[in-house]
View (tube, rainbow, N blue to C red):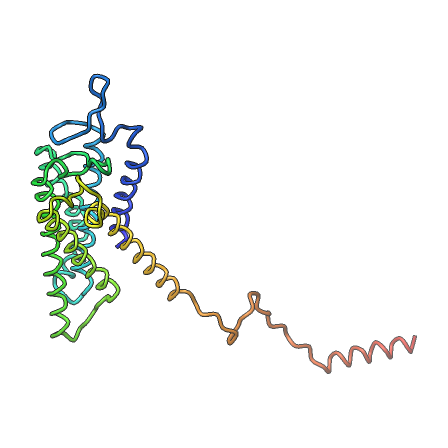
Length: 274
């Protein structure tokens, strides 16, 4: 959950920087013979390609970390035990798997800028590349996460040893629902081309454009709730019963009463005699 929040945070930061400084860095436009040309598919532009690459890579990594929650929320499954035993390999796979579709997208020249938002994305060059690199990614992760959640739930039915993190299970179930909504946006744009993002800005196109930001908000919110819950549970309860002072009183040896009285009496007699 923590690494997924970091990856989503990187994605959101790139979004904010791209929107704030798109004119200063000419992210979506390039200068050609003293004229600004809008970056389209097949036109090589380093700032646009860099922004699109960083967004796609960090967004894919964040989804893979979320997918890992779908496999590990039930510790009684064999897959969760294998993931715990090979953490280093899992981290390397999560960081390396997004590089394969990213290289294919760059070779296919699928990077382009969106005319309404002015941001560069992988798959914005054409509807075909958008379906290949974005829709197929969500479809594959949706199927894998659904299978992982269903197998873990079936494991709960016939097992007495239940090591389940219910909070993580709720978070894991959110991603397949979000991925299904994202894929429905693709299907809606295919059936109604006038509602596509490059033609009009509506609820469907806004959901498709801000899907990474919505996932980032959901994951970061759940992470903060989880951290707050752990802090509250770990803090000791304040109670007046059994209160101990900060500096305890050291025990002092008791002075016998007979010695004190004898000493006073002997001193009094001596003074009278004098």
